[in-house]
Every structure is written in structure tokens, then in C-alpha cells.
Amino acid sequence: MGSAPAHPDEHEDVPLEARVPPTVLATPSDLRVGSDEPVTWWTPSWHAASQHIGYRWIYLLPAAGLLLLLVAAVFMPGLRTIVFVLEIKLLMAAGAIALTLAGYVVRRAVRARREPFCIHCGYNLTGLPDNYRCPECGRPYTWRLIAEYRRDPQWFVERFKAHRKLPPVGPPVEVRPARGPARRSRDGT
Image 1 (cartoon, helix red, strand yellow):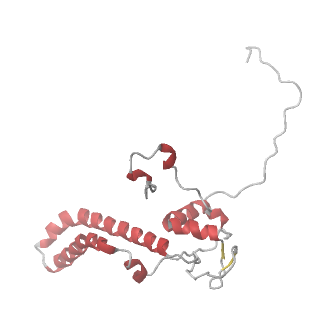
Image 2 (cartoon, one colour):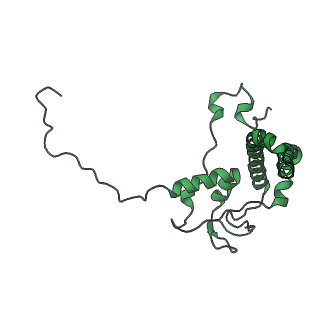
Image 3 (cartoon, one colour):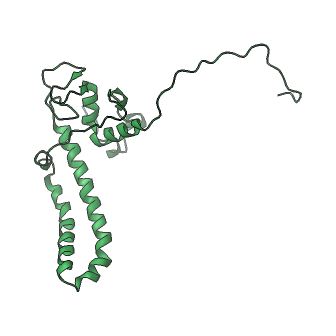
């Protein structure tokens, strides 16, 4: 028996029907949070995240070298021109690589956590019922919200922020049929 690819774009022989995104388990609207209430999100500690970096730490070497060059330029006036010309673009590229790596590591660390946890404070919810309140922070949770947050925490937080910007839902509008026969215009329309 063949196994499904880990990511649909890895193999071109995967039919188009198999390339659909996963079903949404929960949405940020499922969180019962006030519109002006601040919300915190759990992220793994540096120690937990560092366990998932693996060989990718090597991507941080250019950023570290550029920071050393920047520090050296403060003490050596001859390097300032070179640093000014090269450093800004290279430092931006190295910073982008470092931020991308940090996002990847956080996502991997959240996915690696197998026990149910509060998405706000990280408390272990093993043994507690579904659709309850976290004993640590007091915020409501559901297993579906936890699974959706575990899938991609950064995307979940961005969806939550976008959901907060939506206008409030108003009362439903009742649409009634027009009274009397429809009038025709002179031009036939």
C-alpha cells in the first residue's frame, strides 16, 4: 500500500482532487472573547523550540557574522563605508531568514506537543472535559480550537486578528415580495 505524500505539492502525480486544503476544525469566532479584551497566545519556550531547530541553526551563521561586522564597524572607522553599503541589504536578508526560521521552529514545537493544552497559557488540559474553562487562566477552550491552533499557530492568530476587525453583525433583514403585478416599462424591459 502506498502512503499519501506529506505535502500535496511534493509530487506532481497527485490528482487535483487530493490537493485541497484540510478542513477547518474551528474558527476564531468560536472563541468567546470580548472585542476589546486583550488575548494572549501560548508559544513554546526557547528551550522547547530549540529542540526542533536541528541542522537549521546553520542558517543563523550569516546573521551572526553580519552582527559581528556591524559591531566591528563601530570601533573601526574604515569599515563604516563598507558596512553602510553592504550591511543594510544583507542584514535585512539575514533578519528575514532568522525570522522565518523562528516561525518554523515555533510551528514545529506546537505541533510536537501531543497532550491537549490551553492555547492561551499552555496549561496541560489532560483529564478535563471538552468545552470547559482552563483552570490556570480561566479562558474557555474546546478540543477543536486546540487542534486548529496546533495545526498552525501563527495563521490562527492572524485569522483571530482579522476576525476582530470585522464589523459587528446586525439584526437580520427581512425581505418581502413586491406587492402587486410587476410594471413593464415602455421600452420592453
